[in-house]
Length: 119
Image (tube, rainbow, N blue to C red):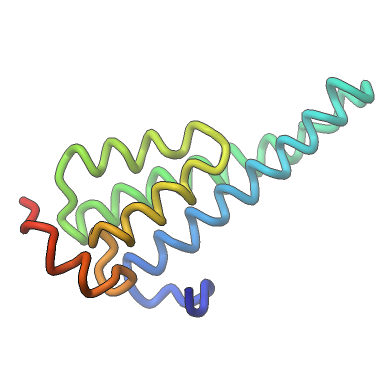
C-alpha cells in the first residue's frame, strides 16, 4: 500500500482521507456504544463533531477535488460520495477505485489498461 501519509497527488490525498474518514467512523461507533449501552450521554459529543467535520465533510470535499483532477465520470463520483455514508464504505470504495484504475498511480497497471477512457 505504500506510505499512507504521502499526499503528493490527488489519488494519495484521497486514499489518506478515505482511511481517516473510516477511523473517525470507528471512533464514533465506540462512542455510541458508551452512550447507548453504558449511558454516558456526553460520549458522542467530541467524536461526533470530529467525524462530521474532519471525517465526513473533509472526505466529500476531497472526493469532489479528486473527481475533477482524475476526471471521474458522474457515476464514479456519486459512488465515491455515497461511500461516505455507511461505516467503512470509503475504504471499500478506495479499494475498488484502485483495482479498477480510477486512482491514477495507485491503481494496478493491468486495471488501468482495461478501463476505457472516462470523460
